[in-house]
Every structure is written in structure tokens, then in C-alpha cells.
Length: 485
Image 1 (tube, rainbow, N blue to C red):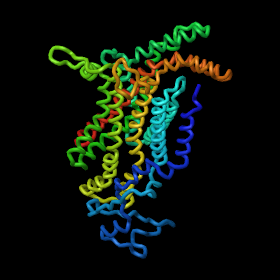
Image 2: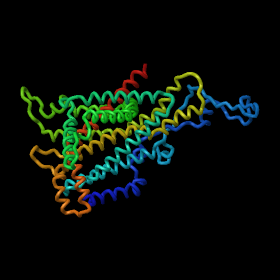
Image 3: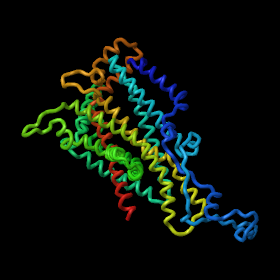
Image 4: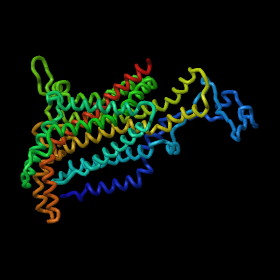
């Protein structure tokens, strides 16, 4: 096993970069503090007094009377239709100290950048050096990124569960049950419509596991039944759907506000494409709609084969990556649309009658900025999940980044089967202490094959995009029609 090589050096260097350099040159901090985002400052009490025509008196007035040893000090109230103009300010580094979930946002974004850099370097290494029998360590980095994303989404969902009022808990539970039923329905659809390769991968996994156990002297009919496998997968899909409920709803609101804020034709077109990006990803696995028409387009009365199966898989990976890059590029517009909710709330307040306390008004304005990183996490987390799930699909599924003819060979493809075939040569050159571990890993490679990873990761990538689009579509309907009514 040649794990202690270039990949280990890259990992150690990147760990030093995360510890020493990234805290001073943080990409997450640059996203917020680059000067492109402006937040609305809440007015001070003196400013509100001046606008309301009230002045602070030195002594006690009739409202401040001592009764039973206590001073009855009523909060200052002002008319809601006051002529208030909020001041804006660019987000500075010192302002981020007051933001909720800023450490989590900074860690997730910076670690994702580091993991993506490790992935690119290891891909270049495998493409240039073509090592045999060597594990791709970028898989571990991608799995760590996905683990951090799940942890953060769990924390955000748990925060909504703690709220007693507002209905967030009921909404999350409802969507969890909805996505469970939806996942069970999707898993019974044949591969003629949704070609994940899940059935083929599970069949290959069961046969390989039975053969592996027989070689170990054990009799077994399979590690798990198909029904149990699909039930566990449906429960996992339900959990992912519950985690992506509020990010999708928030994305819909920011999309509508961003369209109102940006009037340029090009920007609005990119915003629409960004909102429909999950739908495009979903359609890439729908065989009758996209694959059949792209691979074998009908010209006249005959269908002409345009590309091979491998080429289509490669183009699908590139399409997902480009849509992820577009979503990252549109992040500033969405965050600025969220920050403008403070001004929008004040303008809505001016149309109402009555009075409001100065403390409530300050909280209403300040709350928008203090929860900026929560909104940023809800925007970035699904993007990071899709990105690194796609990278895992390419690596573990045996795909390629290059478009080659059917009979050509791509040195960038790291096939697990070829690694298992050359594993015996690596064992002969290794020491006796490494040999048992090599045999064990070789046996696991024969069980967990690229067919299994290809089917499982394709389904999970498709499911993340489907959940995000479903919740965004519901949020769009809610904010545009139900709220307006």
C-alpha cells in the first residue's frame, strides 16, 4: 500500500495551511467582508427621540413614579409612521464577531476550500503518475466535508426545533414524512426512467459479499435484503430532506428579493438559472427526457448516436460542477437581498398605524444582520453537499473528467477493479506486517465495487438536488401567493 507518499505530504501541507494561513487569509471572511455587502445599522435611542420630537428630561416625570419601592419606568414608544432612514455600512471584520454561527460558517467554507484543493492536487497526481494499488486520500477529505455539512445542518434544524412558536417544528416533521414517502416511491421506479444504476450496484454488492463470505468459510445468503436496503436508504433520504427544508424555503425568499433588487437582464437571467439549477440536475438522470435525446438525437426518421455512455456521464459531472460555480457566484446577490429585509421591514412598519417601542424597533433591524451567517450556511451547505458528492461520484464511481472515444484509455480514471488486480504485486513488494492489511483491503475492494458506489452516489446526488428544488418551489409558492393573500 503506497499511501505514505505524495498524498500524505499534500495532506500534511494542507493541514498546516488550515492551521497557520487560513485564519489570516480566510475565504469565508472575504465572502462577507470584501466590501460588496452592506448592512443596515439600527438607530440609536437618541436618534429615535429626535425623530419623534421627544427630549430626555433630567428629572423624574409623571411616568417615573416610585410605587412600593419600585420605579415604574415605561419604555419609550414612537409612532410607526416615523420618518426613519436607516444608515448602511460595509461589513468589516470586527462586525463579524457579533454574527451568530460565524465560526461554523468560516470553518465549513475554509475547510471545503482546502478539501477541494487536496482533491485537485490528488487528481493531477493520479493523472500524471498513474500509481497502482494506492488509495485516493481525497475521498477521506470529501467524506469529512460531508460530515461537517450534516453536523451544521443538524445544528440549524435543532435550533428551529427549540422554537415553541412559529410552527417550524411541525413544518420540519411534515416535510420529513413527505420526503420519506417520496423516497419510497422513487425507489420503486424502474431504471428505464431514472437510471441511477442502484439495482445493478446492489446486485453486484450482494453477489460479491456472498462470494467473499464463502471464501472466508462462511455461509450466507447476502449481507442485507433489498427491502431492508431500500428502507434504510429511504430513512436517510427523509433525514436529508428534513435538513434541506429551511434552506430551500429561505432560498425561495432570497430569490424573489434578489429579482426585485437587481433589474439587469443578464443578472436576472443568471438568477433564474441559479434557481432552476437543482431541476436541471434532476433532469440529467431522467432517461427519457435528457439521456435518450442527447445520446441518440432523432434526425429525420433515424436516431444518430451522438456520444457514448461514458461521455454522457462525464458531461453530467461537468454540468453539476458548472451549476455549483454559478450558485457560488450568485451568493452575493442573495445575501444582499436578505440584508435588505431590514429596510423592507421598516418600510412595511411605516404603513401601519399605532406605536412601537424603540427597543422592539432596534431588535427588528439588528436581528437581520446578526443572523446573516445562519442564512449564509443555509445557502452554502447544500452547495457543498452537491459539490463533494459529485467529486465522490467521480472518484469512487470510476468516471473520468476527460471526454474520450469509446476505445481510448484515460490515465486519469482510477479504477478500483484494476487496483484490486494489481494489489497482489504490491503485496509481494511489501513487508509481512502490511500483508494482512493489504489482503483485508483487497477483499473489501471486491465487495464495495465502483458499480455500488456509482449507483448509491448517483442516487444521493440526485436526491439532494430534488429535495432542494422541492422545498424551493414550495417556498416560492408560499412567499409569492400565500403571503400576498
